Length: 438
Image 1 (tube, helix red, strand yellow):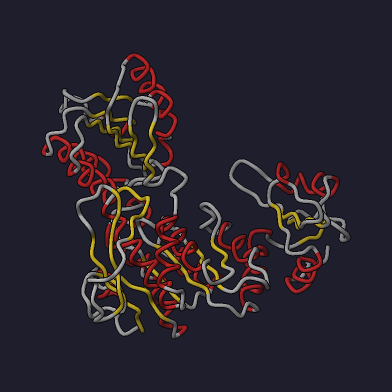
Image 2 (cartoon, one colour):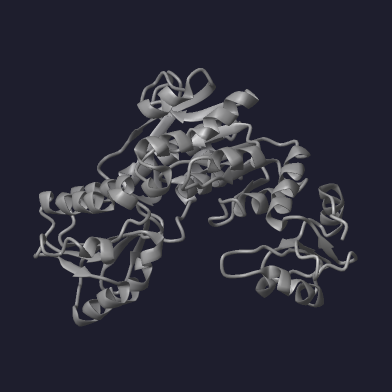
């Protein structure tokens, strides 16, 4: 069976109006179906049904299902998808911003997208399509009508950001921060630092530019002599700002290098947590660099509404919830708890879920979180997941549950009213399912 070339697939891709699908449950008429394989599935077996369902072509790596006409054979479907994306990227003549980091990748991406969209037709990674499949799909969705793109890159092992940077070839790089995330896969904090900084290495080789929080000593040290556009709290940075601390939400002022903040507008964002200050400041910096008017930057940040359980404030009939349950690691959880405890709420409840992918560091990091709760004299806390559950005998004043289902049974029996409740945990714990009981 003849192997189909990337150049041939690209021509088909264009004739199909850049429509791609990888899931027969979500077929798009006239698209190209890529038959990906995983640990528990082999989409080669669905190639014919994809064609029958309206796809124009299917790309497979099983010779037995290929027909050389509409079902085309390649050596490896995933690699072909990635090569196709790289080829498409090479033909794009627009600036691309690559984003990675331990915390805040998606929030930064959404804020930057909101700001840049005030001036440009901007494309940004949808949802969490930030891995070895998601990044190629993101790139292939960029069309000739787009003027700028933001590509989010996630990783849990060294080498992944290097690989994703090779495919997406960003002109600008942003590392939000480097913290205690995916310690198991990266091999500890130094491994995280090495893995995330692979984006900087790519930008240096390309002679691109970095957007960088100049107050972050780790990032500044890693960035070396790469050209930088800086933001932070000092007026010598390209963009600097100050946080208005008497608000539970992010309220701040910003201006450009050596310009006074006195007459700058106070922007109130719909984001809970002062740790989001640096994220809105970053978006201000990037908007300013690309020539978005100050008033439009401010409007975009004030109008932005968080989604997908990230720094969201939800008011139920009974309580006010700070829902930050999309993901969690020791760095982000400590910041969330710290900010929550500084608020002058009358009645406070903390619901935390396990922090996953910490490997050998797991026991100690969960212990630190519980110590933080205790040291802050948090009276009421609900801990969900088997990792927190290991510590139940040490913290008898808190409620521990092995699963979300167990926690929901408990919450049904309680009658929490007029509470401010922080909800934070890793994606796999699905703490958002507890909202209906609060």
